[in-house]
Length: 186
Image 1 (cartoon, rainbow, N blue to C red):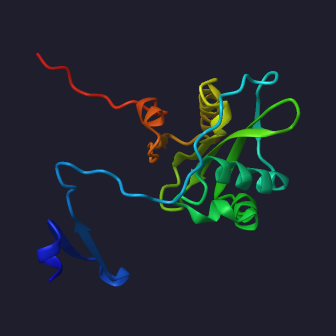
Image 2 (tube, rainbow, N blue to C red):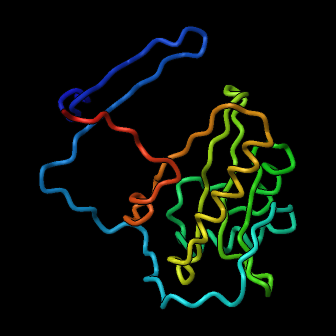
């Protein structure tokens, strides 16, 4: 039955770790996203009220980071832990993530990026969990966060950094933190 509904179905034996079932169904040629979770339309873009400062996040910032993600994504962000300040603070305390925030002079957080440490990749850091307040997009906030994150990566001594755009917001996919190298055609 499953093979009739999917384009590709694979079952991979993982030894002691069990099995991995992969299912793939290609989108039809005329594919349109259905109505997902309600996300508020972004308000007007505001001029920045002073210089944006990027700094490492503390556990005290967890509530404000959660609020930022809600303002950006409502409840559509795929990592549900971001909506629980205690879980976010716990990940920071355990060293699973190092977070960087962009802050206005009045203390309001308008951006976030995490450096995610994976135990199975001890020499790599993932750049992810990025968000910019919708009313402050277009001012280079994410670029500033990426610059600070890159400095942290260099200081860490790790040798691999990776990340990917996983958002439906088109401009974010056009300006990812890392570009894809394509071979030149002759």
